[in-house]
Image 1: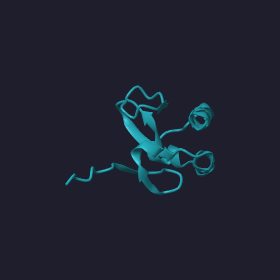
Image 2: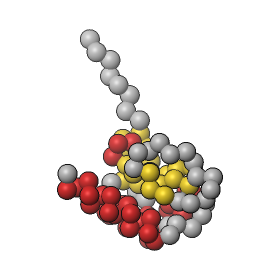
Image 3: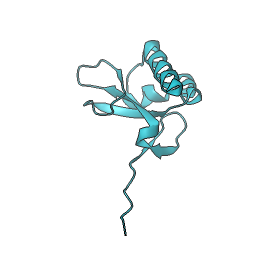
Length: 92
C-alpha cells in the first residue's frame, strides 16, 4: 500500500484558483528590487504565482494583481516574459 504524496498548491494572483505549483509560474521580487520571472520556482525573495495560461496573464495585467501582491510596480516586459514562457512550454 503506497502513500499519497501531498501536492503543493498555490493561489493564482489573477484568477484566485488554487492549482498545483507545477501548473503555475512564479514572479519574484528579491531584496535588490528587480522583479523577474522565476521558472525554477526557487529564487529567494517575495513571490507570487500566475496560472500558465495567456488569459490569466492578461487578467493579471488588467487588474494589476501581481503589482498589488508584490507591493511595487510591475514593468510590461515581465508580462511579455510570462506570455513568452507560456507559449514556449505549449510548443513542447
